[in-house]
Length: 169
Image 1 (cartoon, rainbow, N blue to C red):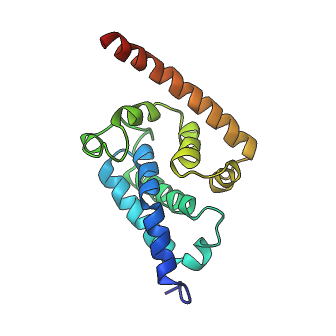
Image 2: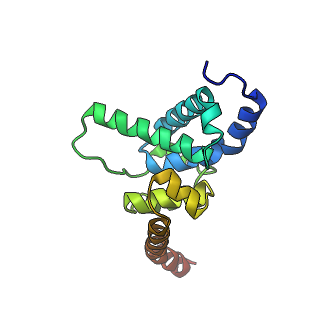
């Protein structure tokens, strides 16, 4: 096993502290709750197997999410789907409302992929701009731009819903 010399407790602490944020990040970026569960499990399994390397990463939780998203893309390519896109919220997400508000999830899924991924890293994984840039392989300025645009789009998407709720009250 490649993780010789590592502290099992260190990895357990990392897993316990990061499982929920990583799972939320995957819920936002993949079509189903079940697939998010499988991907986060596989991401952490691979992190454990490579812990001596992963623990030195500037943002190990981002490594787990990136690994899981790479697996998702590989699976998508194998299924030979004609076009990759983010899908509407499945019923299984609504069953998990304590994890992430279904209404917010629907709005997030309407964002362009890069904006969505920046929000996932910056907000759900609570990474800095620099850590997000490293994890995504883009410039810090690009992270800031996508975050600004993504949050503005979310405000625009959520504003009509908020106004409608105020009228109904």
